[in-house]
Image (cartoon, rainbow, N blue to C red):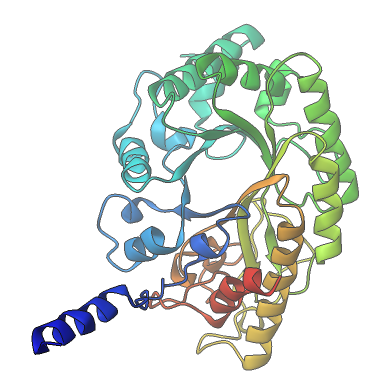
Length: 372
């Protein structure tokens, strides 16, 4: 046989041999692709192109996004006849460009809503009819603008007290208890295909969870769309337990979709005996409330890893109902928990450190699905 034949045969063998495929880099989104979306709440700099540390993390690890502030009433509708869509447009465009599940937060809330919303031109309280008209205009204008582009909306936020009763907000005082149903009715009319959620904190409390179930059932029974409930998930290394969280998920999954919407795990000492997320509650800075200014001790790091792992194991068990798990922020430096309920603290509530590096907790969570 000729030398050329042997060269041809050798080349054929090399060509036909199985080639080693480059190993795909693991990310949070890819790790949970068979379970649910992994989301993050973004600040303005993370979708207008200025946060060069945070943006690569978002693009790499997350496939769902929520805006921290730019769709809240005081930002997007600051004056009676003026809407500010610039930042909201940038947020939606960022999500579309990166093929993400886009969540709008929030249409109706008692906080971060200007006083003028509830008053006439003379500063007098509006009538029920006038406030309903103002609510409908706000919801219709915003939801219609992003119809077919925003996948889901937090329609009403934090309308319940911890005992499950309705919070006596301005919305409740002027319109009455049906303001919640009317908000969902207006949102459904503006975009019938969007997912529509009721969103709240401390829903691991049995009384509050039961109140949320009653609320959503009553609205659904009127033929008004409520896709499901958003569990905010502002937790601490001290609790709630995974079992407590799971109990509420089991209640809510009978109503439809369950979303974990604002997850973080606070590592700092509690400023007061309160597990919620009421932004009106504040405490003064004291040294004993800010012990980790130079970094977390290993024991606290492990406690956070254990707590996050416990929660994700619960979420994975209920993949049939949970459509996304969203952390409230991207890096520890972005977290609102540095400023609430005590301003000026150094917290470590999220999955990426202040330099944008994956924390050990992020690595553990990325490995978790492969162990199941």
